[in-house]
Amino acid sequence: MKFVAFERKKQGTGASRRLRNAGKVPGIVYGGHGEPQLIELDHNALWQAVKKEAFHSSVLDMNLGGKVSKVLLRDLQVHPFRQQILHIDFQRVSAKEKITIKVPLHYSGEEESTAVKIDKCLVSQILTELEVSCLPADLPESISVDLSKLQKGDTLTLADITLPEHVEPVLRGHAAEDVVLISVVNPVVAEAEAEGEAGAASEAGSAAPDAEADKK
Image (cartoon, rainbow, N blue to C red):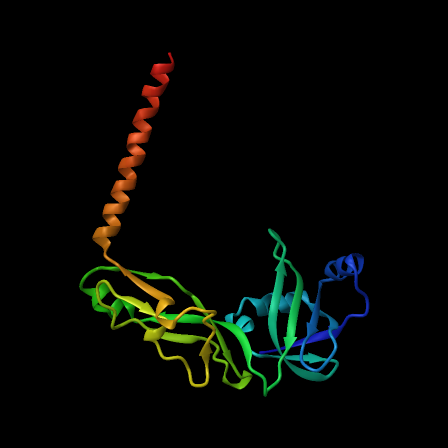
């Protein structure tokens, strides 16, 4: 994905507020072999870009002053209730240096699995993205995970899937078999738990009038 940024000469709260009022977004790009540089972007164009999954998990081409640099989105600050981006951070990347970034997990095939089709189990997605390390050229836009072989009672872990070539998971002290991606839940168990919670709520509700009667 490509986007255009412009050099920002002024910084500070007042300058950022004036930029936002003018339909711009203040930002910064850092890392690589260059100095941190203040930038600004068109808000409407950026708002449309951040809606796309690839903008968050791909190496981006940033055109700044006619020069194109490879960057990653590193931080995005959004107004708590307005549709407004307040600030954005990018990191320069080198083709020869590995990067660490979270990549979306795309699950498919669960409706064809025995667990769902025959046993009517529920498939719970524990992880929706995975942190990986790789060279920029090897970064996948997403990682596909096939669930068509799921059986009743299965638990799918990171050790059970094959990552794209040259892409390594960032485990941070955990073993791959301990990182759970998918859990298959027996619907009977789920219904029993729901009924138990409903019964407890009902008993609590019926006990309330008795407590009021005792007070009287």
